[in-house]
Amino acid sequence: MRILLIEDDTVLGAAVRDQIAADGHSVDWMMRLDTARDAMAGAAYDLVLLDLMLPDGLGLTFLKALRGRGDVTPVIILTALDQVSDRIDGLNAGADDYLVKPFDLAELSARIGSVARRYTGNPNPIITHGTLEIDRAAKSIRRDGKPVALTAREWALFDAFLARPGQLLSKAQLEEKLYAFDAEVESNTIEVHVSRLRKKLGNDVIDTERGLGYRLGTP
Amino acid sequence: MRILLIEDDTVLGAAVRDQIAADGHSVDWMMRLDTARDAMAGAAYDLVLLDLMLPDGLGLTFLKALRGRGDVTPVIILTALDQVSDRIDGLNAGADDYLVKPFDLAELSARIGSVARRYTGNPNPIITHGTLEIDRAAKSIRRDGKPVALTAREWALFDAFLARPGQLLSKAQLEEKLYAFDAEVESNTIEVHVSRLRKKLGNDVIDTERGLGYRLGTP
DNA sequence: CCCAAGCTGACAGCAGCCTGAAGCCCGGCG
DNA sequence: CGCCGGGCTTCAGGCTGCTGTCAGCTTGGG
Image (cartoon, rainbow over all chains, first blue to last red; front, side):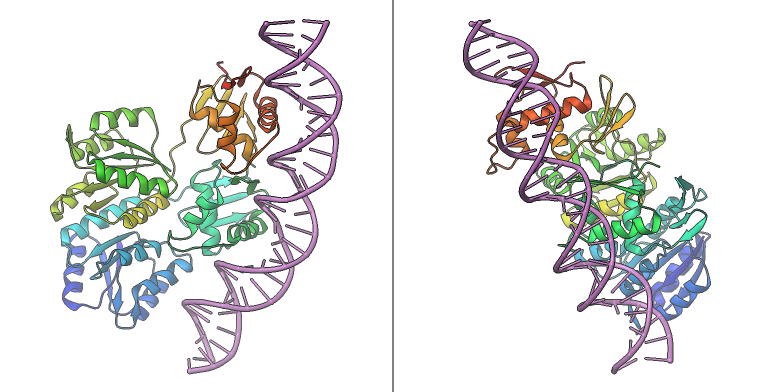
């Protein structure tokens, strides 16, 4: 497995690098966000280990930008912050896991294994839905063979329907999925995003059930 | 999402149950492993919250048996054990996540969301009633295999009968369920909706008991 | 046979939904 | 540091079809 380690503490970084290498993975170690950004642009990693406090910025900003770009590479956060709110922010920003320093290197190995198990193992299954071809893992969609680009929110919304085909999802449920519990929307955002999705994927991808919610269309 | 909570501490269990319910999930709460085992045999859960120390055995044994059986339902461990080696054992036994008591309820919510996001669903439980197939969670009904669409009010009414199969429900009770306490209807609204339901689902789904109320039909 | 209780077709009003447009926010770039 | 641009949210106006109401009919009990 190819792992990108972003950590500015030289002692901890070296220890982590050695542990990962001992587990048989290959590691690239960056100490700054800008070089890490370049590294990710140039190569495909299977996992990112991300410190939150870095000399040239916050790890959370980096993570949000990554997810906003549609990148789904698994991310495990390593940080000294042990406040609950920080953990929640991290998970909501799209992290897959969270380790608080000081952590045990053996636990890091276990967590890496746990994350890896979820993502590797099977080639990406393609779901066909009418004239759409959907690769959920890669977050890519083709309509009539032509690629369609979805934004982060659009994908999050569509993915909610893919997770449970045929299930009716209320706007409240969808809001909960698109936004953290704390975040609040008090307008018709969901409706707007549904509208956009329909424009990109076809009017019949999502059915409205008045007063109840939405449902994946039946092609 | 349908969640099985296995926890023998009544105070913590109630708090967790309430938090999950507030997040919009449905919860079954078991205090023993044997009843939990029965529950999992009888229904498909989307997530299991598992305490490790239970009156009739160890949670880890339960988890290993589950995984050994090929069950991949996501499991989050809740426990007072905070040794790193305990965490590693838990993750290696097949747990998806690990929370050490005392934990913050908001963080539990975040972790549940994190697990849910990467989870690809178990089918919802389907109730068969005569020629009807009912998926309460998905709010979908098939009659003779063909999908039937219910409106919001129709579904609310029908769901009232599904919640208590065989029980007689007076019009007053039904009005109370369909409308907020204050809202008042002074006509035969319930009768009208029952009529519409019968038209969609068949005349025998709901039986009339003159002067008393209605009852789910017995196919 | 009569009356009370329930059933159902028709319909108007309005809650709920859709969508174009405008403003805001944030990351990227000069 | 300031501008630029894409994405997200909010708002407002228009439309759809669900829902409560009513009237006339049917059913069941005594």
